Length: 140
Image (cartoon, rainbow, N blue to C red; front, top):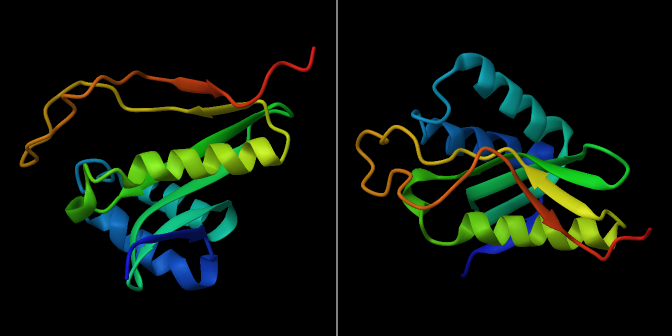
């Protein structure tokens, strides 16, 4: 069965989201960050990529202002990286935010920096420290 993007169900999906973060020790090496992410998947709205019952990726979101929705956490399990799942979660989050009337989607992102040990792709792709996407024309 192909991977399916569906709403995050904290009771059902939190353990799978925790497994995704454990697969990424370079990104989730800080115990405080892991705790914050674990709390977010148990508290906040979001999306998961369900691949035959396994959580392959997830994103959480929260309004950061009346006009902007923020992607607060997004992770793709190590074995699914570079497969497009992260981009699909961004697109899904943008679509749902626009449907809810938000004008912007924002995320704090990791840009190219230190190479990631043991991972061939590292952060060779362009990145930045913050990204924002316009979801709809300005209402001004």
